[in-house]
Image 1 (tube, helix red, strand yellow):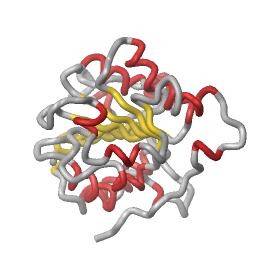
Image 2 (tube, rainbow, N blue to C red; image 1 turned 180 degrees about the vertical axis):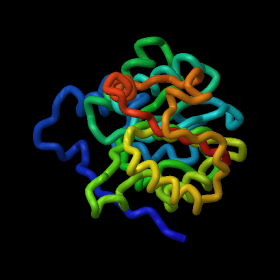
Image 3 (cartoon, helix red, strand yellow; image 1 turned 180 degrees about the horizontal axis):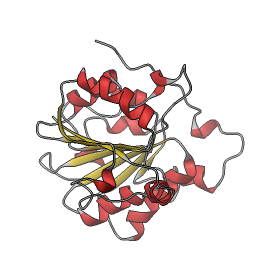
Image 4 (tube, rainbow, N blue to C red; image 1 turned 90 degrees about the vertical axis):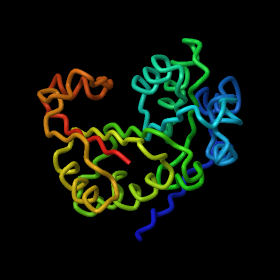
Amino acid sequence: MDSLPRRRINLTRTLPNPNRYTTALEGEFSRYAFSEERAPDNKGQWRSKVFETGDDRPMDLEIGTGNGFHFGHRAITFPNRCIVGIEIKYKPLFQAIRRPLKAGAKNAAMCRFHAFNIDDLFADGELNDVYIHFPDPWTSPKKPKNRIVNRAMLATLHRMQRPGSMIEFKTDSREAFLWCLEEIAASPYKVEARTLDLHRSEWAAGNFMTFFESLFVKDGIEINYIRLRR
């Protein structure tokens, strides 16, 4: 079985020029926002340690939250579910966690982490639904190995998800999407929905449009969409 390649990222505490976004990880948002060093301490304990809830409460994951419109929507609209977000960039991370917290939600947490190191964050069977919206498509010829939706990542998520959970993947890149379909075909997931043009499909009505998605749609770019079921 293919394994995920490890990725090294700069440590927040060693940054030469901290700013208000970086310091927020250890300051005002430290209860629900975790640096790359603190986040792994929650592995297997996100429900009990971070959200202070029982093991039967659904806990979802968003990989690459961007500025957090979808992340905040999920946390605020579905208070009976918990959600954890992964983001590398500090400002979007700050924006993503601030939105649900300002609305009074206590069921959301963010961590600065690279998705390829996800084994360090979650135990097998700890997750429910997973959202992957508009990741970097890595369209240069030598870069497909960096795409998040690959067979190794899918195998890893399958272990971490509970039966009946789903993965939702959206991208504006047709090239990346078609490549990912081959990886999905080699995975243990069942394809439940798939389209090359989400906004002209039967699944359009139930779609939450992210910020980047709205820009793509405005420019007439078709949105590629797939939903997988574990």
